[in-house]
Length: 584
Ligand SMILES: Nc1ncnc2c1ncn2[C@@H]1O[C@H](COP(=O)(O)OP(=O)(O)O)[C@@H](O)[C@H]1O
Ligand SMILES: [Mg+2]
Image 1 (spheres, rainbow, N blue to C red):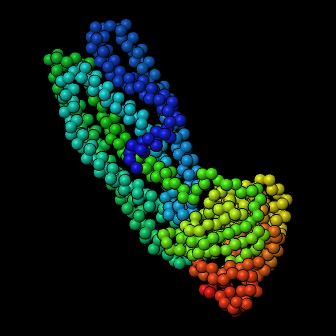
Image 2 (tube, rainbow, N blue to C red; image 1 turned 90 degrees about the vertical axis):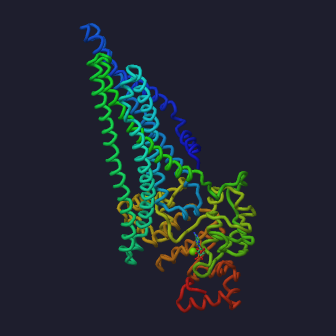
Image 3 (cartoon, rainbow, N blue to C red; image 1 turned 90 degrees about the horizontal axis):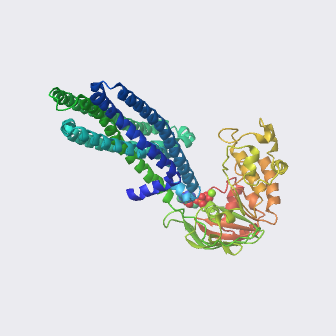
């Protein structure tokens, strides 16, 4: 992305606050004038009034000087606050925009972008943009104005003295240019390293149990140390460069002053220049090097902000691939639940087909079982039905309408999925079960919980159903999470129900209760059950047998047994105590 486009994007975010920015620019004007005028007033005082013993004039000047300082302080106060506020407003908008955008992205995107990287976008990158709005833009204007003002005033007072003072400027330019280039490389490296570090951290923290289980702590730590050390080196380098650069600019400033005192002093003695002028010059020279140093920093900050902006806009401009149709067809309030797969081919990437020519029909109200070895593609079928992924070939339809022709929310609100691993929000038990079905009463939730034998567990929690769950509260076991997932589906009461190995971690006793609840739920409702225990699907109207992405058999339990083929084999194995997860 070009710098120009980036700037355009950044200005767009600042647009709602342009009045605030303009206001602080206006204040900046006052501040610049006030700070430039101060030495000049003293010069006038020295040259015109002190010499003439003009007390009255001195008093006026004193009052003006005082007022200037007051006005400048007040302006600075307002300018600072306005800028900080603007910065906060803008990054608030940025964060919101990024989060909103991320929530539209398809699962594929999150597989390709490590969580750590995305978190960096919303935190670190946004913060470096904050600097741009709250410091860089206005300070840049201020510094440039001050520099121009000083040069103009100096030239106006004495061309000769100005030239003497600026003898060192070319050297400074070269030094600055050199240092800043080195610094820029270092900073770029620092940022990339920080991003890797954060990604690595996020990945490792979420996979800590695996790391510990397989005693990989040493190995992971070594890699972390490597990254950490690289980051540390780059950081040290930056510090060293800055600690050389800043004093050297100061040194040149002092050399400039020395030249001024030497030449200016002589000129005062032979009366070619007034004392007041030399006095004002010493002030301006000192004032001159401040913004100069500042400008060099601005350059870095702009670089950093641009780099961050580039990453942010890249994220914002990555279009979701799973999108709503332009003219969505509407599904009825209640769908019948006829699901048809027509010669569906699907691959997560390229042409590595995970589903091959999958063709089946599920009629309204049927209960269908899907069986097959691990990796056969069972879960992928579900990912397609609710459009977490899009199939490459073939058509999937619900009640005769291609699912790609309906609004994603419209589609998903009709489908309830009970997964093996339910995500638990940091909310109360009630809220975790209810999700967005606000019309559901607490009594209904409790009734459902009783039906699947988890009511007594929730009641025993410190605040019963109002106990906070999730990372900051009570942590649920794997089986309890599955029951939670089950409850959510019962409460949501979707027209189509899908279970993906949803009872794997539930004890036999509870499973009986769950089976009963499931039988109740699947009445008059299209239900797809991916099961690892045959008992769950024996009574299904239809069983689909998948092998390496292909449907190899289809029929009810009895028909498939009569076939004496794959399913028959499977049952044989199962009766020997193996589960369906074992290779067919
Ligand atoms: N998010 C994913 N990205 C890439 N490949 C995947 C993804 N999920 C599953 N797969 C692959 O697709 C195949 C089918 O997986 P899946 O449908 O989950 O099988 P099952 O549920 O039958 O065990 C497997 O080979 C698996 O490696
Ligand atoms: Mg699966």
